[in-house]
Amino acid sequence: MTEPQVAILMLGLFIFIIMLGFPIAFTLMAMGIGFGYYAYFDPARMWRSYGRALEDGAGTWTLVETWVSGFFNNRVFDLFVNQTYSVMANDVLTAIPLFLFMGYIVERANIVDRLFSTLNVAARRLPGSMAIAALITCALFATATGIVGAVVTLMGLLAFPAMLKARYDETFASGVICAGGTLGILIPPSIMLIVYAAASGTSIVRLYAAALIPGFLLAGLYLVYIVTRAILNPGLAPKAEVKPEEEVSLGQLTYMLLTSFFPLAILILSVLGAILLGLATPSEAAAIGALGGLVLAIAYGALTWKRLQESVYLSVRTTAMVCWLFVGSWVFASVFSYLGGEHIVRDFVVGLEMTPLQFLLLAQLIIFLLGWPLEWSEIIIIFVPIFLPLLPLFNVDPLFFGILIALNLQTSFLTPPMAMSAYYLKGIAPPHVRLTQIFAGSLPYVAMVFLCMVLIYNFPQMVYGLPQYFYGR
Image (cartoon, rainbow, N blue to C red; front, side, top):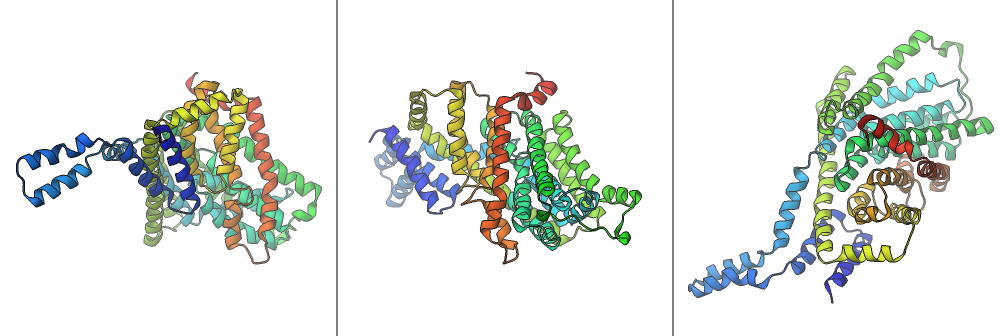
């Protein structure tokens, strides 16, 4: 078996094993080291020390020790150590635990329920007011935390029962929660974009600037859909009847906004503005966000030792998962490339003689399908690097490619049969809400994601405009 054939076997075996449910990070590391040991095996290097010890007449125990050390005298172990150090020393990845901590501390400070209540009051005169409030709350919270499961679960406990109590259609209401919870993947400061920047070598600052217009465009499409459906079919989202004693004056509303919406919005805008204007690196801005989250929790009187412990634990756990995925992925990719697998993939794609549009469609289709069984972190860290070396062949900018991926990954959480947002919501929804209803509610938003991708492709300045304005070409 030739080395390129071994590389293809390595990739196929990896896909088969993860489909069986094995932990992906450790599978990557194990296969990278296992196949790497074969790829870098050097008998002379392995037996050199043992031969010298044998010539010197060393004792049995010394010979055993020398043989064991010789067994591990393989360059794959040097590769593993170097890749681990590279991940831990990566300045971009330093921002991840800090952004996560900001999101988790905000979640546990009960800021989100105040925000939803305020926006619900502010929008009560609009069609589908409670759905609008839920979507905006989801978008803000998803932007702060970047964890889809946390957003959908919390909003499913907070806003979903309130909408059902207001006689909202179950399908309509569930779609709002599922779609809103995924927006944090795209809208900065997105953790997914940080991971993509680290994997692709793209500037995170330019990525954030590029994602702003597409992110708000998609959120705007969602809002237009909600309002339009509520107008055309008022039974989906009955208008709230406001009793005289429930009327809120302008002063009261302003106070509610000042104590709920604006603090979180200012925190997010401060972090994002510091990055985009070059006032701070992503890591420094993330530290500001983490500190700001603590200040908000203290200001609301919601910071307890237990909540602080939970936030730190969850941040460390999620960060460790991402970092070990990077370590495993880079070791796996290095061995795969050394065996010639990258050239096989390249030659195969070139042999298809595709146009840039056809390549983009194929790449996005593959990522769309991968989104069913895999999380976005696994797709970005493991599979996207396979496409990156092909981008220059088709004159595709990694910046533009990254935004398309961020949009595409929205669908992975919304498309049956493996729509994780739907399963998150089903896990905490009332028993009478069926999974098929949640799926049906999510599908219109999938169509809007595809519409947004088409608009982005036809009007690429929506991606390039802000980066070029702020930072030049």
